Structures are given as structure tokens and as C-alpha cells.
Length: 279
Image 1 (cartoon, helix red, strand yellow):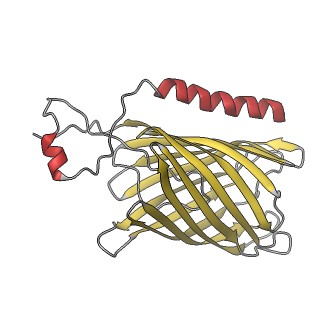
Image 2: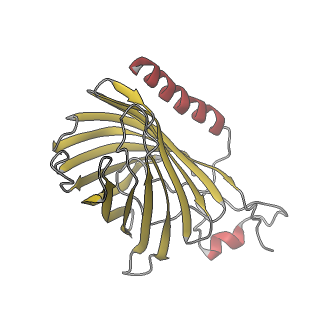
Image 3: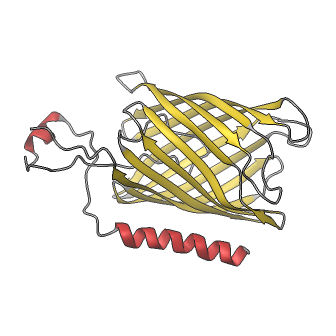
């Protein structure tokens, strides 16, 4: 099972790389007015698309996927007694509203393999960065008990919180503070925990970048004590719409594998609104 999981994950990454490399490189769409006025005024030229990755951090950026853009994130994790393939689908319904669906199609813990739980929700950007003010967004997720073989929570849950992102030149910071209501499979009501994370990212050279994070959950119940992880990763922008990441999670404390290797991709598939430049 583990060998098949690794082969599937690697095939997914390489297939995406093969399909996306021929796409011409594009600049992000936040160019200034001077650059826009200098661009060719070709009739029917579509707006440029740039990925807004949540990977590889546990935290979520406050920035939203561009309106009309459908974006996917897929990756895998490899650790002692824990392996998975994880996915996130995102759609920019408006400039401020992002719809989200997450699922782990493969989850293997302590030798038991199945399909993981799912999560459906939205992110709403309250306001964007301007001057000293950071980008601020709200996030809500409903936890859907779709797991098989007992590898999930086994009950409906909810989570909600605030997301803050800020750029200082080329230094980018993300801060998350959320609360999660975890359903009880054999009883009514919820257990509760809190999630806190701070992430930092910075370009290194050319298309290569780095990101680091400290993140943790408070105690949920007697069976699920508090946890904290440290993460370091490298990112590579194949193009503005296609980003590859790879790195490691280190468990600082809690019932987690000491070391978890991961890799994945973020890819903006298409602008479903078919926007075109205005003339």
C-alpha cells in the first residue's frame, strides 16, 4: 500500500509538471498602471492568472484566488506509521469570496488505510493590504465524516477563524487563529481546540523560494493532547500559475510522527469567467 501511495503521488506531480511546462510564463496581475499601459493591446487577450498557494504550510493565507479562477492543490506526506495524499480545490467566486473543498483520497495511519474526512467551506477577504494595514480574512470549514476504515474523526465538526497576511518588501508573513469544534462519534456535542500558526516566506533566487512555519493545536480531549510542529520547505515557480513545494515537518511535541516528509503542487487550472482585457 505504501509503495503504491508513493508511486501515485510522484506520478501526479510529474504528470502535472509535464502538462504545465509548455504554458508561457506570465507575470502576476498586480502590475502597476505604467506596465499595463505598455502591454500590447491585442484584441481578445485574456487576463493573466497567478496561483495563490495555501501549501505547504498548515496555515492559510488571507489572500484569495482570483475571481473566476479554479485552482487545485495536491501533495503527499510520508512518515513512520503515517502516509497520505491530500487535496484542496479552490474557486474564486468573487474578488473577496473563495469556495473550498478539501479531501485526503488516501490516508494510512498505523497500518490502517482508507479515505480521509472531507472539508467544505469558504474564505472571505474582509479587506486587502494597504499601507500599514494587512490583508484580513475570515475562514469557515464544515468537517464531513467521509473517512473509511476508521482513519477519520467519524463525526461532523466545524472550524472558523481569522487570517492575517502582510508583506514587508519581499518578506511575507501569515498569521492564523482558529477554533475547531470536533464532533464526538459516540456521543452528542463537541470537543474544542484552538489552532495558532505563524508562517514566513521569502524568494531565494530566481524562481526558487523558501517558507517556514511554527504551528500548533491546543488539547482537544484526553485522547488528543496538544501538538506543535516546525516546518521548513523550498518552493519553485514553474510559472506564475504552477508552483511545486517540498520540505519537512518536525514534531516539537504531541502524538505526531517525529519527522514527516512532504511534496506537492499548486496549479491554477483556468479562469472559468473567461475575462478579457478592457480596451
